[in-house]
Amino acid sequence: MFLILLQYIRPVAAVEHYMEQHRAFLDKFYKSGQFILAGRRKPKSGGLIICKASSRKEVEQIMTEDPLDKYQLALYEIIEFEPTSYVNELQSYLS
Image 1 (spheres, helix red, strand yellow):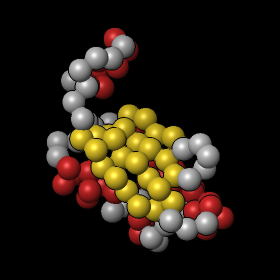
Image 2 (tube, one colour; image 1 turned 180 degrees about the vertical axis):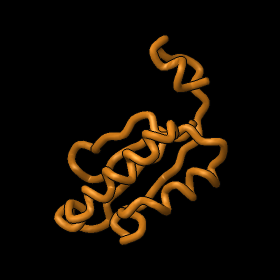
Image 3 (cartoon, one colour; image 1 turned 90 degrees about the vertical axis):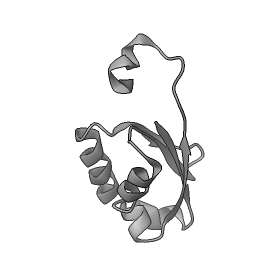
């Protein structure tokens, strides 16, 4: 599993211009089963994504499709982690 932290590097107004395309990007990977959760940071300075992928390289490839990356609006920190405890409802996402 991977936690992807996004940090906006341009004004929020510039980011908002591409938010519809960013949501379409998220939807694509929700449908593939790779994205489990995404949300905005508070205050509005970026976001985060929890991603199921086989490797960091796969995550890096996925993120190249994000309009926020294509238009150099955000920086990404990718953190690999191994879930060791969780609520039962998440079991199907983790196996």
